[in-house]
Image (cartoon, rainbow, N blue to C red; front, side):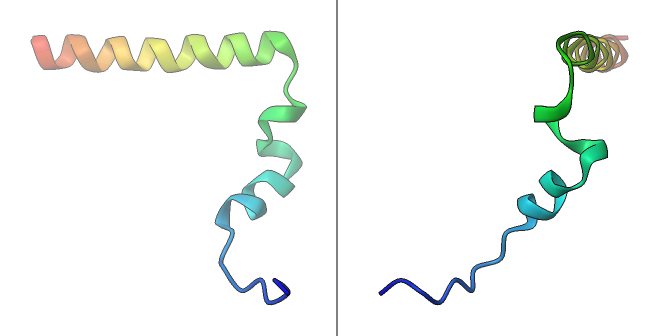
Length: 50
């Protein structure tokens, strides 16, 4: 029935690379990554306000 799967899945190519898979990260790596993201966001906020 729904056999022709010709839509593009760019996310699958990213998820298949082990270096960039959120599922393979340990808990402390996720926390560290969240900290880095928050730090960058705060830096952008301060740059805009300055």
